[in-house]
Length: 375
Image (tube, rainbow, N blue to C red; front, side, top):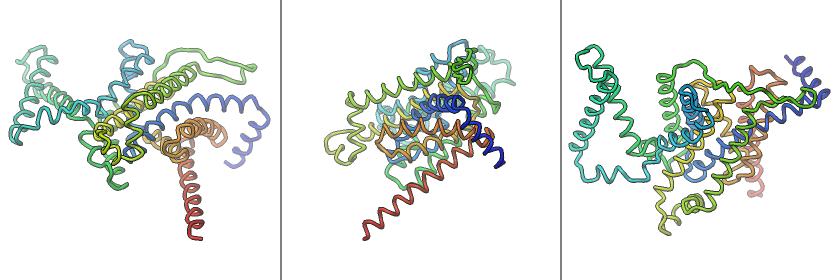
């Protein structure tokens, strides 16, 4: 293996055009990594929640784009759809405070009856829609009835705050282990749900676009990566402008600096947290639509995107947008180059290795700072 690595390094040194190809393609996919990591940096910096489900949000966004593609809709039009779907799932409806408006005056018994009645109506609607009202087919009634119940439960889940309302708000300002355990549970639920709905087969979105060749065919650029790069840049700029210009963006930045002071100044930090988490999920959804046209994906591959995000944010630091961009682009280049030198079968191992190296470097730097302070 060492001989192969040395041989591949010699090839890169002797063929600068090939090295340029690695750099260009690495930068193109690195923009997507930076976009995903920026969402994690928001949640981590504002809410102090380390989201292990980050990559699973990305894969769900990819499945949204893939589903639209199967329905005849171009996957790039699936970017805003994936953005909206993940915004709702993350907890976007929590901002409307439906929980207090609908259930604050209800006793526990009335809440149970309300929920049971809602599920019953959903089950009946499910039978009506699936079976076209053919209630005489008793064998199919249980399946369609429970499908309707699941749809009703999912609707209630969204209305009462989605993932944020049911999980995340309970772990804000808790210890590291609690937030990691909670988001790990969310990741497992999302993986298994996607596996049940979409299956475990690898999927991809093929647009049939021909590659662009330059420098005597030594540098090859896939148009899908180029378009994904441009889309990632546009979306990142839009998010940055929103954070700087809008009142919610200013509230998010104030909360990240000092949540207690923000509450004293009249900022509803609960809604800020809900919006931040929903925005992160939406960013991941849009990034997932870009992932769908670049890579093959399946329900259990989200972890690798979560690790990439943690590497980028850990290397760049919280609140350092230029650092997140640079680290994301650098990761893309290192991953492409490392896959060529070591082998594509070790590409995911390269990402894990990057995380270990970054953590070791951070540990050494922190240790030296403590020594300086002690002296």
